[in-house]
Structures are given as C-alpha cells and as structure tokens.
Image (cartoon, rainbow, N blue to C red; front, side, top):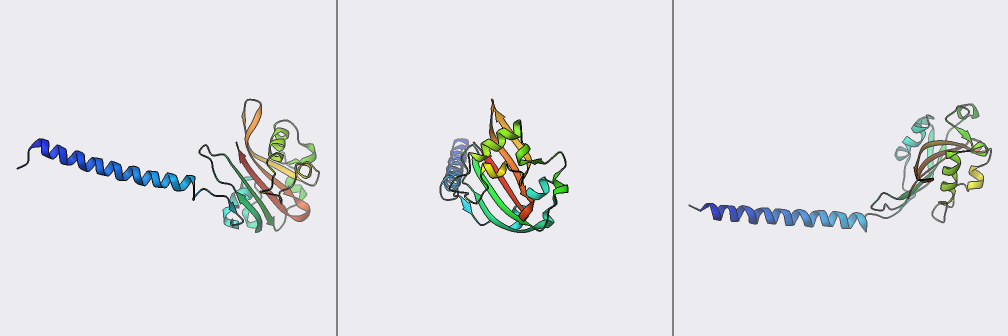
Amino acid sequence: MKSIKEIIKILLIGWGILCFTGAIVIGCILLYEFTLGNRPRIGNVGAKDVRYVLNWCRLGDNRIKEVIHSYQSSRSFTGDHLDAYAIKISNVSISELTNPDWCRGDKVEGILNDALTFTGAWRNQEIPWFPSEKELRSKEIYVYPWSIYYHGTRPTAVRLIFVRPKDCMIFFISVKT
C-alpha cells in the first residue's frame, strides 16, 4: 500500500500535467485569435448576418434584398473595430423616416453631429463605398443613432444607421477606438 506522501505526489504531478495542458490549449487559442484568426472579413456577410441593423431601427429585416458591401475589421484586445455594411432593401418611404428617432442628415446637431464627425473620420481606403461625411450630411440621407459613447468630450464608439431612400440603401457603421 502506498503512503499518503506518494498519493499526494501522484495527485500533484497529475494536477501539474493538467494545468500545463490547459495553459498550452489556452495559449494556442489566444495566439490564433490575435494572429491568424483575427483578420478583416471583407464581403462575406449575408442577409441573416445584418438583420439586426434593420430591426434596431424598426424597419424590419424582411426588406433586405442583399448585402452589397461589407467590411469587418480585425479586433484589438480592447474591442477596437470598424464594421460597415451597405444593404439594398426592397422599399422605404420618407414617412417612415419622419419620426423623432430619425434625423435628416442636413439637420444633424449636438451629440449626433459629434458622432457624424467621428464616423466621417473613419471612412478610408477600407470602405471607399461608404458615403462621405458630406453625403451623410445631405438632405438625401436619414440617420438613426443606435449608440454613441463618449469619454470626456469626444465620441469613442458609435453605431449609426443611415438610409438613402432614393435608391433604397441602408448603410451601417460601428466604430470603437
């Protein structure tokens, strides 16, 4: 029969092997997530992946015809990202966009103005298809602010939904710095 010391020694060796194996597995997962598995995804988003955009602004996801463009950046450890979509929908009327939740681009002010400026700064070579800040501030575009987060006096994260009724296009942008 083995002594208590031998049993404890075997248990501690087993526990050490288990912990070492767990550390290796977690290390490999983290390494993958921060290297190979953390790359931008361009153009591989389907209608079911963007349903929430139309549901957030109460237009209903049954209008989605197709996702024309999509961009999902890699994520930093703190969640910094840039996601943007251009979604073609079947229909939208101006009357749907005249409630207090929506704001016409040329009438934006206050916090929403700050968010639009912040969003405009993110339009770069990654999303050349996204409307420019000038276009977003026109009377042709309506904006729905889903969320705007501030640190101090400037926005650090925004999620905005834009509608261009003339060609039934929805543009969504989510940015966090």
